[in-house]
Structures are given as C-alpha cells and as structure tokens.
Length: 257
Image (tube, rainbow, N blue to C red; front, top):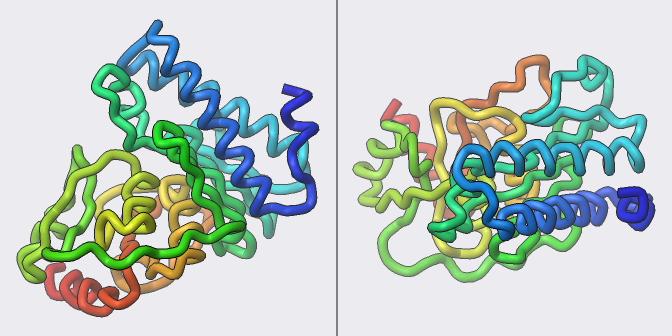
C-alpha cells in the first residue's frame, strides 16, 4: 500500500482520480479472477477492499479534503469543505458478483467535487480495461444510427423512462452500473441514460463529471444542474445524453411526469 500511494501524482487532481480509480479496478479484477467467491459474498468483499484502498490513498495524498463514500460512515467534516471526494468503490455490485456470467457492466467512481460541482472525476470499467477521466476527456463518436436508445437500470427501470420511450419512439436498453451506462453514452453505444426513483450522489458524481467533460448534457430530470456535497446524500434522478437531443428528452420527461 505505501509503495502504491507514494507513486501517485500529488499535484494533478484529474490524474490522481484516474490513477486511483484504475488501481481500485485492478484490485477488483484480481479478487474476481480468484473464483473463490461469487454472488453477494464476492460483491461484499469487492466493496470493502476497493473502499479501503481508495480511502487510504485519498487520506494519504489529500488529507485536508472531505470524503464521502457509499461504503464509509458519513463524516460531517465534508459539509465544511469546499473540496470533497465522492466515491463509489464498486458501482454495480450485483453485476460484479456475477463473474461466471462474465458481466462487465460494473465500475469504480472517483470524483472530486469543488464548490458542489464535479471537477476531477474518473470512471473505471475494470472488466473492459478502460478508465475515463476529466483529465483526458473522451472524444465523442458519432451518434448511434437508427432508433433512439435510452439506457435504464436492468433491475428497476423507472416507469417514467417507459413513458418517455413511448413519446419518443425510443428503445429502452437495460444495463447494470450507473457508471457503465453513462460511459456507454460517452462511447457512442446509446443516445441517453435516464434514471428516476432512487440514487445517491456517489452513483452519479464521477459519471456526470466525465460526461460533461466529454461534451454531453448531464442534469437532473427537470433540467437543473447536478449539485453535490449537500447534507442529504440522495440524488434520485439523472439524465445524461447527447446535447443535440437534450431538449427533446427533457420535454418528453416533463410531459410524462
């Protein structure tokens, strides 16, 4: 651990976020490859290990920053900090545990929010060997051809999304992790990712930062910006999409609510 944290870049938050997300992803891949555990026990081990790794790294190199993670006890200090790291050490725990099925739709989220806005952010897709970062924003490929594709949760697709899809003649595509869905839009595999009905800031902070840096639209479903590090960690809805269709999707959402 000491060797790893000592080699981290100390003066570039963007590179730091990417390196931490990538390192946590490598650890998760190693645990998953052992094939000793599966299902919920594997997911629990992955969550705990990645969280410990990320928390120790950030505490070592950014000791004065606030910290908020899905897997750590809340620290009220963060509410007095302008700079807060918001972490989901393993987004898509269910998909991670399904290693026999070879699912790759799980992610690591590492985000630094500054003044409530996503700043230095990284989303690692360890099963694909990919890390997306605000330090080196992705170049958006051409939009997918054919019918509008909207990504939704594979276990709890919101009724709102079904109504929006009907209005826009869109196809709903189920997928795991919020980070995996957001990066699928960045990678040009779908036009949009829509969620309504229950998420937290660690689910979306890093994906939103990476998506915005890549030139995508990212907002709440009422079109307002995503603001982070409030007293309430809930952020129940999200829209990430290509900018050219944001207005039409937001209008369809408004008409469907």
